Image: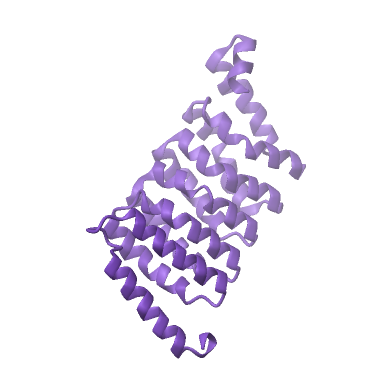
Length: 236
């Protein structure tokens, strides 16, 4: 849309950075939650065309306000949908400096759907900021979500872990995520335990014999957990 409008108006980049960015700034500050929600959900499309400097000057500061203070779950959900894609548009440096804070706030959002929505887009974030920054800023929060009281949040984490395995160094992945996975194997919800077993099999399939999740590791892990299940009365 931005590209077509700029072409139609004959102003190119100047039209995008001035007029269209100004229009979006008004929309994401609108009093009506429905208007804000729609605008925020499409913000990543604008980030593909507007210059990162202009995004930083006019739009990105609003995202932290929305993540922290907006009372509409739908607005925060739209932000969770788009913010990692915005990160791809503005690049690593601006993401680390200005977007990590609202992203981490959304990961702790009181609304279940917001937390789930964000996790479905974290693959894009790790691509943008790299494994070192992701390890430092995001993985500790993923560890907390592994014990979330809502089982669907844990399910979303299980679905994300194989994607994360594609980007993290194998040894770092095992060091950070193995305790999380083992904890999920002991979850009180049957579906979480079942999906975690499937996760282990998936990790085994995508790792070579010299990787961290070997067949021997998998068998030892499942045998250990099976013994624990028999011992613990809630699994007896």
